[in-house]
Every structure is written in C-alpha cells, then in structure tokens.
Length: 257
Image (cartoon, rainbow, N blue to C red; front, side, top):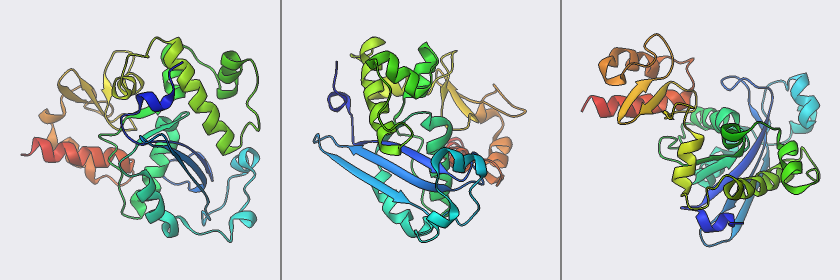
C-alpha cells in the first residue's frame, strides 16, 4: 500500500473540528485537532480548545461533550487566529467530510479575523467525498471493512484523524489511484458525477472543461462571464458563505481584466 508521504505534493493537513452546531455561517469552533504531514516526512500536531462565546447546541454537546462551562477559560477564536492561519496557510487539506463542513466553517472563522486561506488553489483530500464516488459508509464502518475492527477511541478527534488517513491510504490502493497525483485525486473528490469541478466549497461556481459556470442560483449552469452583475451580487451578499464570496472576487478580478 502506498504510504501517504509518497504522494504528497506539499505539506498536507488532516484535521477535525467540533463546533457549537451545524450552521456554517453562525456556529463556532470549540475544538480543532490538526496533523500536518510534511514533505520531509515529519509530522506536526496542533490541538486547541476554543471558547465559542455562544451557547453550545444540546445536540452538539451530546456528540463532543464540550460544555460552555468547560470551554469558558479557553481563548476565543480571534486570540488563536494567527496561530491557526500560520499553521494552515499554504497547505493542502484533508479530513472526513471536510469539504462539506470542516473547511467551510474554518474559513468562516478565519475570515471573521480578516484572514483568508486560498481555497481556490488547494488540493482537498476528503475520504468521505471520495468514498461517495465509489460507495457510501460512515467512517467507523469503512474502517471496520478495510481493517476488520472498530476505530480505537472512536469520536476522539485525533483517533478519527488517524483513522481517516489510514482509510485514505487504503482507498488509494483499492480504487486504483496509486499512479494519480494528489491534484488528480483532489479533482475527483471536488467534481460532480458529471465531471464538473466545483471551485468553491458551497457549490456556487463550477468548471466544465474550460468554461466556468454558476452552480447555484437563478443563473445556474450559465457561464459566469456572461453575467458579471450576478457575480458582483454574490460577492457583496453577506449571507453567502465567505469562501464562495472569496472565490467570486477572484473570478470578478479575472473577468474584469
């Protein structure tokens, strides 16, 4: 089985986030655990608890057990934003359902501190999304099928990250992806079943061949360059996810040159 270090194109971070709830725009991070796999074959771990300064939803509390009382003496996100940005900036990103949740909510939190990851150019290794291209399972089910046992300490952040990495390594072997680069695998993960590449994390923009199209809204499936007023509307609309607005700004700069 190909080791993860052998296919890295740059430093790559696998991470897992626990939050106050599931709303990407309004909920907050309460815990983040990230493992950076470096090109020099070393690892660096970052783990922080964060005071969300808002109430933890009861359903979220049932999952991760981090109450507001437990979190009250930890720093707020803006106090650790510099550390997190410096750790994540310039790296490819990986996780389990990280495209659908972890990356967008991290982007939202960083953007509130005026720090922006370049989502447009990173490779994303999402074992959950890759799995859905071939089959559908929960992380522990997939791990059990591949390795014949449950994840030890399931639902602790670091155990889930380590399990996700092992699952991805096994997926590369099982799905015949050993000769593909991280960029090629990322393209598979970030593409629709029709082969359209999703450019942001919320599906507002996609690429079909060389044409960039709207993926949502009233101009869905039409070329972005044909309606720049709508692109400006997306960029300026505050209740659209910040990662999509950032990609929209890049597209606006490109098409207005």
